[in-house]
Length: 350
Image 1 (tube, helix red, strand yellow):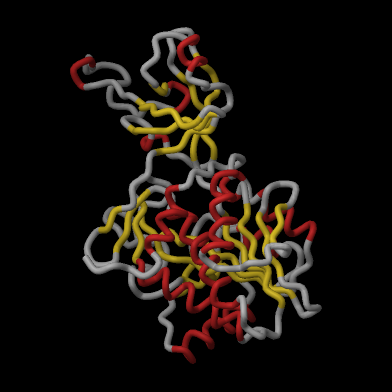
Image 2 (spheres, rainbow, N blue to C red):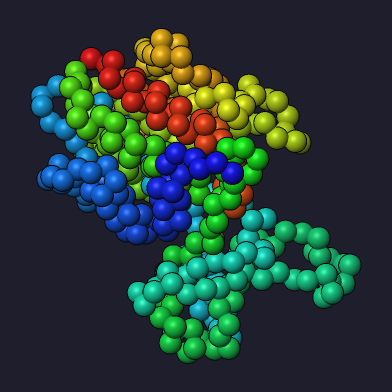
């Protein structure tokens, strides 16, 4: 397979853990990449706010455009350690119960990462009666770290409420299709690094602020803090866009296709993108020959929280299949076009 531009850096971002509320590792990774990859020597304009958002800003007195991408991911935390050495869990964010059984996981402790597995009841031990065929709810799910007692677990350094992540592998499918846990929203986090790299030396009519937000998956909490502490003129939220382009999904929403460009998120469950911002990016895309799509969907993004501050906001995303699973899929061509569209769109804002 041919090498894909930027995929090596993206893989670093993807594989770094960062469950909502426990974003220290991914925040440190992005901070390091801003210095080493984006090659910004003076980091005085890079700061962390009280909730943990990482913000890089340019202040020259021009209108602010806030570009925001959430860096957190869905996951689990340890909720209890049983006397028999098994761990009980609580879900963080929208983790589907069917995702849990038979998964390899990592528990992130103060002493370092610990391997674990989420088991399941094998067919050999099923009776054919009762709830054999039902999905095991998270409330009855256990993590096995190989210990026989609570004391052995504690000796490993595991404690309540240590975060737990699903093990990740970035795989390439046919062509430029990529797959792995956490495309939502490490795609947006990586794209924001690239946009910063492209814009850092540009003379602009706006002051861009790059915001890697926290706790999006549990209620847009980082973005709400941004909305209460900043007053941007424009907001661009970079995220993924759940596509219906898969078997078994009724085409209730407009079909969004891989390889046909980023998606202007016109309407979702809690937000309507600014018509002015949508038109701006449509014009830029058509002028620059950048493919784009637009659609209506469920869910929402950080753009909604920031829009409530009165700014002109738009959410733009990369189409992703199987959202919130361990096999999310996207087309790398769409990622590169997202970066190009955002970069060119910011250049033409005033």
